[in-house]
Image (cartoon, rainbow, N blue to C red; front, side):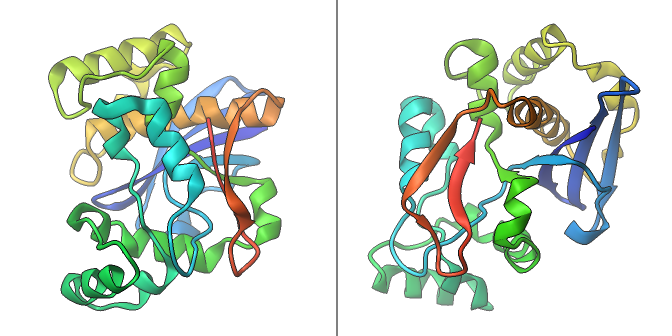
Length: 224
């Protein structure tokens, strides 16, 4: 079984793949979602299932778990109509008519979210699961990692947690093209492999929205 953790990055997408039978790990980079290697279970740090209006309950649940210092890493208020706008100003203005504007950082995620929204069907959700790296690290750490992943200290803590869990971080860094992805992107993708493993083994936890599905029938849930 091949397990994958996937994150967006400056070059498109970064995936860390673990072949359980062979015991091997590798890094793959792709400009587009449909160019990523095939895996039996994928945990991806990107919303799957979007409301046409309002907010997803699973996002609020994730924020509560992560607490005040890391909860902001979960974006609130991503909705499918936002994917159609050409500029941030237009998207933000529409969002405000629907009770909440759009964070500028979330705007930069919309092209990646649109790729997944086009590609994933309800049937695909048996294989492709929305996750969040900070929840995955929370599970390894026994609580939120409050140090930012943008700092040397935060990177070192996350790297140590992965190494303790058996992830060959040093070898993965050898396969990283830093022109296309940053160190924190690699660590995020790597920890999501552990979430994909828990999903495959039936030991993962999911935070679910109410209603549970969007207008396309996609389940709105975050696994960790």
